[in-house]
Amino acid sequence: MVRAYNFNAGPAALPEEVLLKAQKEFLDFEGSHMSVMELSHRSKEYSRVHDRASALLRELMEIPEDYEVLFLQGGASLQFSMVPMNLLDKNLGASYILTGSWSEKALKEAKKVGPVEVAASTKESGYHAIPALADIQWKQETSYVHLTSNNTIYGTQWKEFPQTGHIPLITDMSSDILSKKIDVSRFGLIYAGAQKNLGPSGVTVVIIRKDLIKHDDSLPTMLSYDTHVNSRSLYNTPPTFAIYLLSLVLEWTKDHGGVSQIEKLNKEKSALIYNAIDESSGFYTGHADRDSRSDMNITFTLPSSELTKQFLQEAANEGFIGLSGHRSVGGCRASIYNAVPLEHCLTLAEFMKNFQKTNS
Image 1 (cartoon, rainbow, N blue to C red):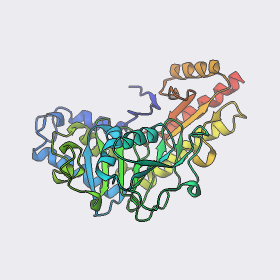
Image 2 (image 1 turned 45 degrees about the vertical axis):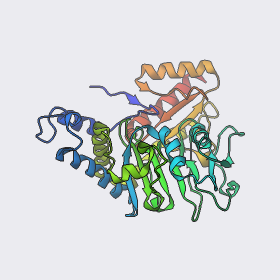
Image 3 (image 1 turned 120 degrees about the vertical axis):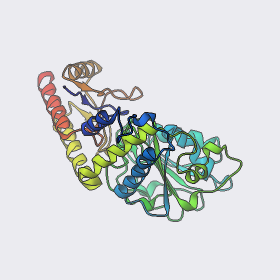
Image 4 (image 1 turned 135 degrees about the vertical axis):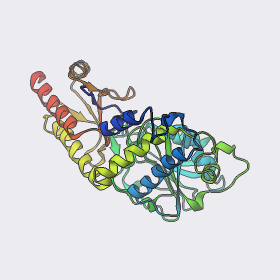
């Protein structure tokens, strides 16, 4: 079977090996004579899946013992509300760094909970870059500092995170979690929708330092981190099949050398496409400043809207999927998450070069 060159921004490509294993086990998981989707979330068979997913994530990300790993629902969008509801002290407020649409949405939801400030923003310059660390200013005492580590729409990514000291750093890593090594101990809380690097849509990972988890009877039960910690993310029926696929993706990541090897491969993949842009003599123009370029989402424009439409149509004819830029910025975007093969990035780079030669 011919597989598409899948450059979708999310839900995104999954490893073919994972899909084949899931297909093999689809009707009979580990001799249960049932699909994973049919298992009780209280069963011993599913408990092994759940625990395996948590253990693998801890191993791959080297998550310290003083952190909890949660599997929740509602996507990163629900975390925009859960984070301030659980962590924002109204006497202190919270600080948000704006680098794109998703950080703006997080800020909007936090404002509904308590006072917030913008610690830095690159909105006025069109979100072409990540703020310089020296330009980020937050109050000496604030509940937390929030940022989005990778910006899918604009194609920018943090290369170095701010040092926040005793103030918790809260980070939306939906689009670059597990793509490179990070020091988890630098963060108070990390959250990520799974549908980029971790698995299918439907499950959201939250990694939270234990001292930030507090019981608060004023919170709706389902919106309290304490509820999900105490129930091992099993307070209600979890997205069992999504967590099963997440565990398979984590196994695949481990089998392919872990995060260090994945990071190396991701840099090779992005270099192929960025080189096609940089060597095009202006035919392709990248949106992001070079020192802020994302290794996950490569955004670029062509000389005219007519050429952009032609590029996208010819690309689709060749089997490339998901290359249209986000509707808010236009142009083109290639999302090259962990599961996108190096060969697909090489094929795209060659297509870009050939299209330029034909249309320059």
